[in-house]
Amino acid sequence: MSLVAVGTVAFDNIETPFGRAERVVGGACTYIALAASYFVQPVRIVSVVGGDFPVDMLDFLKSRGADLDGLQVRPNEKSFFWSGKYYRDLNTRDTLDTQLNVLADFDPVLPEPYQHAEFLMLGNLTPQVQLRVLEQLKRRPKLITMDTMNFWMDTAMSDLLEVLKKIDVLTINDEEARQLSGELSLVKAARVILEMGPKYLVIKKGEHGALLFSEDELFYAPALPLPEVTDPTGAGDTFAGGFMGWLAKTGDTSMENMRRAIIYGSAMASFCVEKFSVERLQELSPELIQKRIQQFADLVHFKL
Ligand code: AMP
Image (tube, rainbow, N blue to C red; front, side):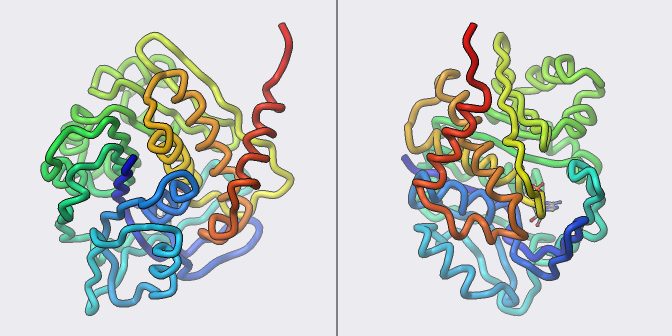
């Protein structure tokens, strides 16, 4: 089934306790599309880049079956740029710089085939752009998932609340869930957020895994304990790509299958953090992914 992915395609500067990477490829949509491409093709991309974005990365996305008809290229402008620094606890990071550049006045235009998307991933981006995408759909997708972050809660809360009314699944991290709901307990936060519109809420807790809430069910997936974590950037987006990729591949949006999708998302995120930027996501195979899924199953298996 078709998957449309909306989000940034960007440059990042990253500093972690294990090193630095300057002007490397990043962006929510890049991570989502690469992760999802191991499950479903084409992933139809909606984004914007400047003339500075490397052609070989666009070619690589195409080689992974991405459809770039919805990617606008503005030759005389600069791509979105983000810079972040992680500390010893890799769950906490500071944003050092955000330069919207081409994103400042981005107006997404959905080519015809995109307007019939069956699965839609609204990656982290201006809520106004997320709304513009929703307006152009010819029919309601089977499932709409949305990611966002504190930056948009601080700068565009009313638009964000509008988008929340129109989606099925929201994926955010624990701090963002607390900020959005005003509740410290994640269980209470989930109740408040589910009242805002989404039917499901995924709370990502970095190296502590992810929680899936529906009105009456709760599922927990651990993160795989890894010997080495190099760069957590994009883990959340990669999670979303694996989650939506699995759902789009199977076409099944039952709670039972969403539990499975959470594990696929977690497995893809566990690869993402092993190297800087999108490096690790460029070298995976279905066999490697399946092996890792098995590690997750073994990790939580026990007999009652
Ligand atoms: P994650 O680590 O999953 O939160 O995603 C990190 C990616 O999000 C980086 O590659 C950035 O380019 C991108 N990013 C950072 N800030 C923003 C923002 N305000 N809006 C959209 N994308 C962003």
